[in-house]
Amino acid sequence: MVQARNFPIGDPILEVKNISLSFGGVKAITNTSFRVLSHEIRAIIGPNGAGKSSLLNCINGIYRPQEGTISLKGEVLKKNSPNIVARKGLSRTFQNLALFKRMSVLDNILVGRKLHMSANFLEVAFRLPGATREERENREKCEEIVEFLEIKNIRDTPVGRLPYGLQKKVELGRALATEADILLLDEPMAGMNVEEKREMCRFILKVNDEFGTTMVLIEHDMGVVMDISDNVVVLDYGKVIGDGPPDEVRSDQAVIDAYLGVAHD
Image 1: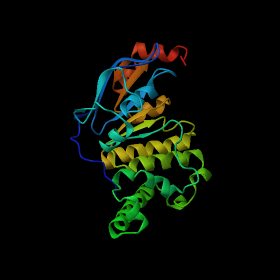
Image 2 (image 1 turned 180 degrees about the vertical axis):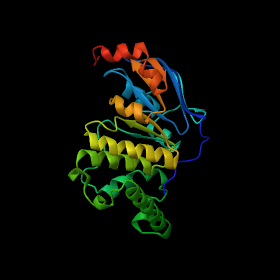
Image 3 (image 1 turned 30 degrees about the horizontal axis):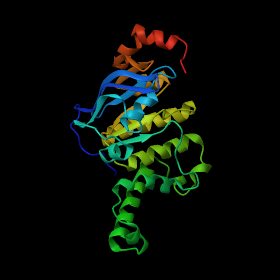
Image 4 (image 1 turned 90 degrees about the vertical axis):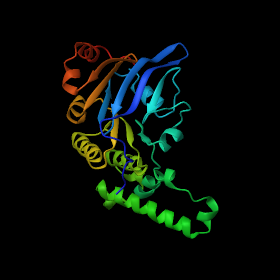
């Protein structure tokens, strides 16, 4: 089965230090710091417009903060980009599905193996032995993911024909195919019903437990956050107002006030 790369359990695998991000004169993130430990499930919560997705975009290199540093496995990411962080062991799912709707479930998951493909176009076109072996090995890895996610019955189905909850599971499968040490999950349960959320929680916990994959997720369902998270970071207007275990964060007055206030879009 696909395995995440090794990193000592309990060590800081991701550190965000004093980052600030502005768009023109609008501050999206202000002097934000927190760290994520290896094998942890870390939730990022906050009202709408609090800067949660912008924070993930900074971590995986879509945005470059004007101030502060982001370190992955002890290395400061100076020239950050999605390709660079992916090769260093960090993968991302998105709030809005980014799947290829006409491609099958298996082929969508196979896209996640791109990082592990070394054969060039000519080697693939002429079906040279090395390219053929690489393709077979990558397909075998993806078949294992299909089995792990319990979606063998839809492996050949075009993703666009699947209900939303199953599409979210396919996106998780594609992220798993990268063999990342850290998965950033941007609202992995958005738009799901209760049963679909329960199923997604089961697989998030299963991935964390069986592969040791560190998870950082944005989620609005507080029941889900409290049930599956080891620690929680709370953002409000781009600033950290809470950071700690779920029970501690839930009883923090600043957090309570932020959630009882009006959402700031």
